[in-house]
Image (cartoon, rainbow, N blue to C red):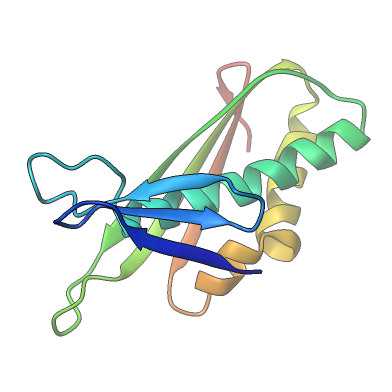
Length: 140
């Protein structure tokens, strides 16, 4: 796996490109004219995307009919010397459709406990929690 990063303006805007040619823009979002996402926001996006792919894949194999899938991710940061790494992350998944709530919850559990490489990378230092909502109801 390899990406390239190129500065594309005279400030902090970077274009990141993967081996397939897909791109995202990273920027210093403390600047008023930021045109990209911050690197820390990209970590939250990566957690949601990685686990989202896992959950959809698992539920599709179980023939669950997902008509809508979204997530919200919140990260809490802590000051460590001059850096502010994540201390904890909460991921909320919102699924709609003809879905067995227990299967949806189990798919999230499998993602975070076994499959999601992003959360596994963060796991030793960041507490990651999740909630699953199916058709508007929190699944316990």
